[in-house]
Image (tube, rainbow, N blue to C red; front, side, top):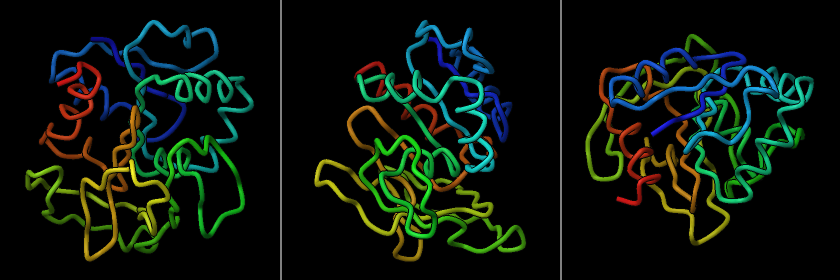
Length: 189
């Protein structure tokens, strides 16, 4: 299985390491010529959502990635990736992919100093979750959007059709549960 990792900014190298540990082939997407749909899924990593949105547009990647997701291509967004996928962002007027029917709050857990990790359930398995200037999901906007994880009453991971999104950074731990979940989504398990 080959996974494209958006490698413009943020924690892309850590996602690549997690995928490699699960024997998936990785393809970095840095410019338009790298995006040729020759992969089984794409990861939009954590980082700075404003910068990533700007780079996606400047490099001509925004429309191809958007169309890929809208046509049913598998996509996994973490932290900033969740913000880019969200249909609504309560504290930011910028519009990005808007393919995930959720309302997100940016930097919901505070600034960098408010970063933390905790143990929470993800799709029935307890894992360590790392939150860095993380958003959370204020509201799910479609009944088909499945809540996979919560922290202190706020939604932190969802699955909607071909999309998986998490407010936390599973790539920053050695636990590969979330990445395996994404690969299993693609393979239909």
